[in-house]
Length: 281
Image 1 (cartoon, rainbow, N blue to C red):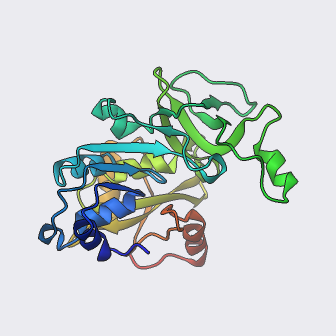
Image 2 (cartoon, helix red, strand yellow):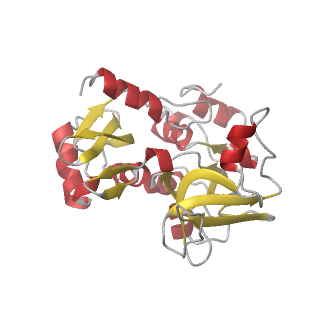
Image 3 (cartoon, helix red, strand yellow):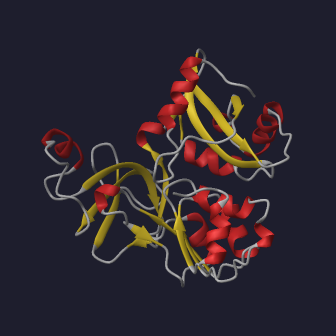
């Protein structure tokens, strides 16, 4: 089992060269207070995904740990774990901002609500077809019919954008999107922006009811060690760099974000906390 204290020790002791994992694993490795005491020079390849990948994380892995190759990827259990991946020859901006292109034998398309393919740069639902797509959910024909089309496409429930070269940028889960005064707000995009703040280690955003706008964003934020960032400070900072509908109206600071076994933030638990009332800020 992964623990923050064991990560640098085991990486150094076992001379780990390849380290796949969600962003929080790599973030913990970078931020460990005793990191300098461990020799991590054997680490040459990092593959990350499963959640929002802050651009700064990619830069720190290269700059602070000297990792030669950092790749981002996208996948889900229903497609055997991998759908797209960056290649080593990709330029840094592609690796930092996309999840790469489909792996061999796999097709990816982005479609609208009616299932019609969308052009490059237009967000829609990600569909996947290939040898890696499941035949169905075990003994659940109803759930299977909801996600598999008659011609073999898997509806992922994820929102994404394809660039002209076929690189996929995953925007968010459809169910996580919320609407602020008529504008679609994608939490993953807002989380990426919040992660640029120097005092923010991690952030998760959900939509909460608002009497005037319908919904607005609430951010759960993990501060960097020693940071004294306040909610008002972060909201003011956000207003300088985000469109108004993206700016979180509420910020709650937490020690850690709730995650499942694959490292993904459990947004349902955060929504449950909101219904129960705010915690300490």
